Length: 108
Image (cartoon, rainbow, N blue to C red; front, side, top):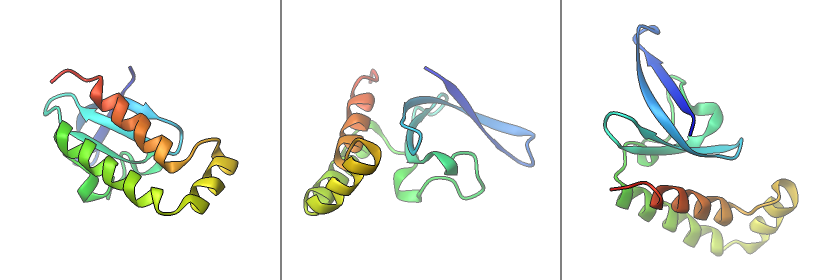
């Protein structure tokens, strides 16, 4: 598993994160110290604004619940899933499910 650092205070401090899932577009990480989970666009990791607040600093149960909610939303839009499948080779729901599986493999 790879580790990434999120620097703050003008690069003088950092937090380390285990990368649990990364498909080049979205990633799921776990803070090595707090064990909290966060996910979002890969390009947002380490930026000033970072991942969406409601997708950050979650417990295992919370991240799974959030991802299951995204799957429910996506299941109502199969035409969008077909576009994703054609463009990226996977649907958003498949991506969220893969993140759930990655979180589920982490010991409590």
